[in-house]
Amino acid sequence: MKVIGFAGYSGAGKTTLLERLIPVLRLHGLRVSVVKHAHHKFDIDHPGKDTYRHREAGAFEVVVASDRRLALMREFEQPAQLSVHQLIAELDDGVDWVLVEGFKHSDLKKLEVWRAATAGEAPRPARFVEDDFVVAIACDTPDKLPVPTSLPVFDLDDVEAIGQWLIDSGARFEYNSPHDV
Image (cartoon, rainbow, N blue to C red; front, side, top):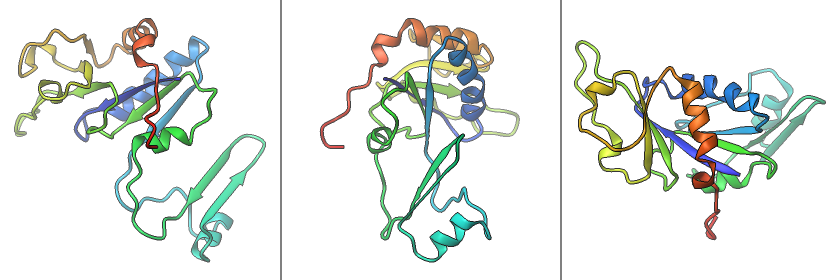
């Protein structure tokens, strides 16, 4: 499996980029999974639904499945910060690409999603300047990058070019799980 992270500030367009990139990779016959970092207490379940009621009653894990999908919800008894590698280990081995959104401090190779400041905003620093794991940049205004770079720079809207670059560079994103997962 190949793994690449997508890092950038909130509102930079990471989710939209992934949403548009997944179908591009799928058109090449590739199986794609996503690992997403969420903040604090989030929920994908809804009050009143069976799975919600089971969790609220104290179940440690709830697995719900149909003939179309499976979902696993696990409650932590104590706060736990799982590493991106632990989450990748939970995925199906038959996936071709794992797109990781968030986890900006991870040791994964990353594509930085960067936008120039809009009116009234302070300029945001670029991660690629100090993060050796950033291997490419997707941005809205390449001419406004804070410093010149020799990294590949893509137009944020050119998902076909980003997808083709990932496919062409696939070997560099081959995932080797650390032993301490």
